[in-house]
Image (cartoon, rainbow, N blue to C red; front, side, top):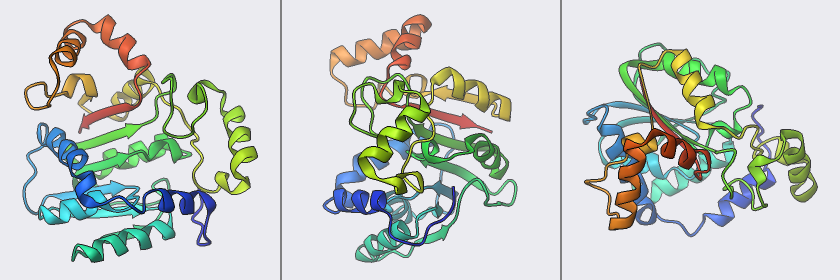
Length: 258
């Protein structure tokens, strides 16, 4: 993917659709991400984090408030401006760079945590990106990954029946026909992932621990009703059931430890 400095329709749509969102709206999600990460790496003030794809900047702002040393890499100059604007409202200054994870070089063994949420589906050469992240992490560092799931019945990428099940070329044609040619400049999901595919590759890269969201789900902390708690307990103890559930889950979510 190339960096485009002109305004792009998909970014404009994203900004308009999220203009009403506040940090307070996002806090439960952000707190949950940090809680899950802390189960594998005890973050403390000064811990070094890198977020790939900052969006509106809420995770950046929240981490700054927690005195974490966080940087951001964002391919969209438009979104960098949006994130800095929101940060200003909360008296924060973000350390953001415009760049593509496929081409950006990081010093090895630099970060305690790297976060990529709703990003890797848009990274054309995602395997190179995963290797770069592994190398940039310190030993024992954590990679938090959240992306698409090919066989989910609904998709956050586009509201179309069984969207992720379509062949790549069909999805591209559908999005171009409905949203215009510049969706291929930024916004298209190049990939719809599966849990087995990602688990194999993360292990191949070298991560010593690769756990999916069922495995790291904290039943003691999360406010689940008895039925959901019972379902997750079964999924944790019966691998075939977990495999079926993950096949059709809304997203692919992993925590990987170097």
